[in-house]
Image (cartoon, rainbow, N blue to C red):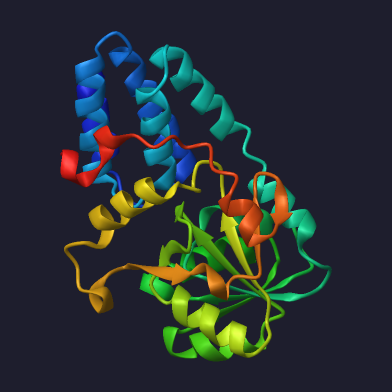
Length: 266
């Protein structure tokens, strides 16, 4: 497939995990390594089609600011492939606890499949939860499917609420609709809230602002499939380095600020 057609295919894809999205995009970007103008245009178009992806923003920023874009593309692909977030999360979760999750989160789902001793309350947000339920039942996991109306009760009764994000900023994160309610209920009930943020999701302020403007700028908040959740509702962050504090996670961004990718520049 021609690189341009490949990028169009990736851009149209929905429901693709962040690792797959970055890997496929990075592979296609290799062909633009000696075309700086084409590389900028391509990255802008990809972000317009996948506006909620922090790792895609991370990839584009690193590649556009690199002295050798092709080498940076390969380095990013390697970093994403070696992301240990799911494995470390599976180790950090206490034994025989109940966890509440929303929808079908990729990294959380992988971590849960590595454990057989947890009770998992899966809230069927956006009609995606039953897919995760089916996968966990195939492995004889203890799992309950919860309707959206039961979100509050599930969050309050769990031992840990796990929320996954594709983008984290200085004071908030982007997550599936319902995450703010789940985090608020858990916070009020003294249930720990763990944010699961894989490689490339943590963005500096200007890049975060640009991503949110793309992702949510044209949609009424109550109609969007995603929402911004305050980091003040999060107790700890599970990422590539294991379980860390919120302040440590936010300060660990390795995404450069790239004005060429701001919404105003497009």
